[in-house]
Image (cartoon, rainbow, N blue to C red; front, side, top):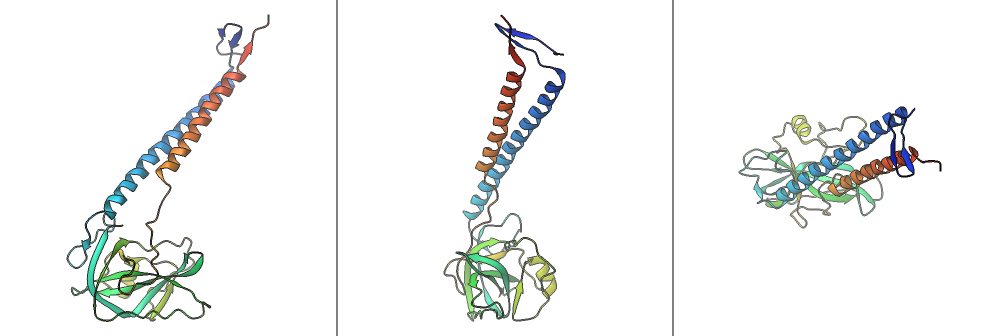
Length: 246
């Protein structure tokens, strides 16, 4: 039985209860999803603007200033120190132009006793995984420039990485800076320094700030939800409108 009847010339709109309830619930859900995506787009745009501002900021002097893990990510930085040749960490499953390899992390010793973990770049696995590549380091004092970042995530990791290992070269599936500092009793800055292209001790430069879903994609998703809501209204009106008999 119709809950209302509205006549428009030779047509009458007479929806029944159950289809109307379903319409209202689904329509409200579609609008809610669209609004949520628009909100996410605003949040992502704020993150993009913040990241661009950090990348354009003045370089942070790691010899004189403290690093904020959240506020200083992506910010340029400069540091003077000595590479420590005793140990290096190779982050596995890093692809460069379709070729398998590692991101190489080396320690830089500062005069104040602290250390910076330096991402020197990418190196190929080579002909076999049985042997890790030889990774010589320059000696003496060096000045390094780059950007601050966290080691990239490699997704699901089975087992704990051997952070307590004292081998010269340690292969890891993930690299947590704080956990490494605790395991090896190191006073590490909370972010790694991604060495600039051509920097002293650098390998193949392979850094791009990790991107999440862009604001434009969220807007696109919102448009899709709103379009579905409009389509639902059209269907609801069409199904519940009939022509009067002559």
